[in-house]
Length: 305
Image (cartoon, rainbow, N blue to C red):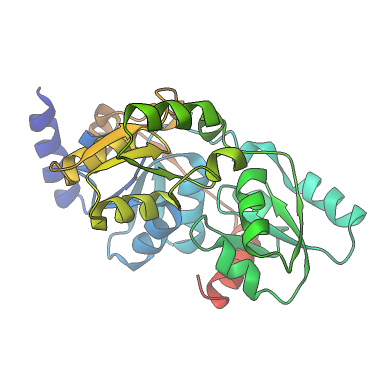
């Protein structure tokens, strides 16, 4: 079976069996092309809540599938590969959050969307990379503990200096592979290219960028910009997607090592096997976990995410 034949069969079967397929932007192009929706994790979760299908496949990592389940508790939600986790989400748990609260009474705990459902149950507000600055600036509390990405937290702290933001050491191993030396090297190779980076990158990298934003923000900026060349500082699948979306422009990875191995676990064959036999892991969360984890997400929505 060729790639195109497998894609055609996936599309046929998902329609026949009434399955909604979500693909995070870090998935490979062959998977993104057969998805009903692709994009950032929280945006996909909101889309899943709106669609009529009662079966949803998340092609991404575990916390993303959990977020889909939180927002769509009555739907059957599956993860495309059971081993696809997020190292950053696993860096902190509810016990550590309790310890942080105990040591810092009066502080509000803000969690990045890249956290487990269990961790979200004890947090006050959830944020995404695109909404973090806006949400935190609108919070009543001045004293804030930001978990788990200290790089995104540092970016927010710089943008919202009126808040007292305590950072917890943690971050995305994939984005941490990008160094200022990479930026210098790529600017020398492509002097006309704009450098677009994700705020999960090191602060020293962020300071050198022409644009800083979420995955969707980076893609939208590149598509709308009049510039013709771009150096992309996030997971390297975005380089490929932009090359397809904007063939008249040139895109270069800021580092060849910016690859998320957890995202790469899911293959087109995994999606094919799921739509044939539901050969994926179903995400199950008890009602209390769903209710408790939903509170910090609802607070984010209340503040205008």
